[in-house]
Amino acid sequence: MDGLAVLSGFGVGLIVGLTGVGGGSLMTPLLMGVFRLSPAVAIGTDLWFAAVTKSGGAVAHARHGHVDWRITRQLLLGSVPAAAATIAAMHGLGLNKGWSPALTLALGIALILTAIVVVYRTAWQSLGLRLERWMPAAHKPAWTVAAGALLGVLVTLSSIGAGALGATLILLLHPRLPAQRLVGTDIAHAVPLTLVAGIGHATLGHVEWALLAALLVGSLPGIWLGAQLTRRLPDLLVRGLLGASLLTAGVKVIS
Image (tube, rainbow, N blue to C red):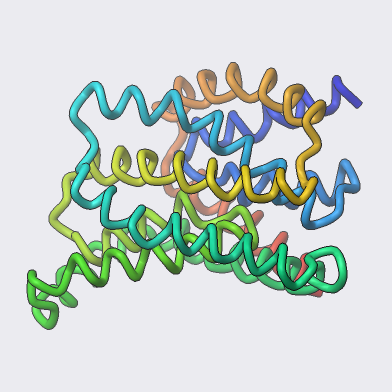
């Protein structure tokens, strides 16, 4: 299975490099469908996959000044406590005794939401500019913390949301943020969040470490190649194919 894991990591990395999103939303269904992991173990393994693969991107964006640390801190103020509280609830209520259907439902919903976000990505900025008329600037920090809390719960339950959904919420609340800083801020927030959630799942025994290592070996060259190919493929085509794949996976998981 190591060869298949490396190839799978390469495929997901390629899509991440092409689109900037789709890592968690493709990896978790892949781990469940191809490698037959339980929802909990698939989610825990994918959280570590996301934390490691996005770390390099976060460092690069920070070095280029593409991270708005004020927004990042506000998001983390909501997401990290929410992730920790969700893990504590899993420990207290006994995840292995009945949480699997809840995790599967959260995963399916997150996949469908991500598909909608990916396909209609260009529409969110205009919606954010309209919302700005009704949202005083003084209220934005509180809404950003609340958005972080929502992401913390969703990412911990499904491993999905730190990428495309996180960027969309940032764009809705801060529509004037330049594109490079939007991406950098989203990635900088995703790394600590997925790491905290991943550590929480590891304490529950929900990480397949050997499989994770093989996936990472394949993902790094895949991300590099995808970044090179993204200049040659139409963005609308790539987003359409990715959105269709995520929507299909989400419906399949829920059904």
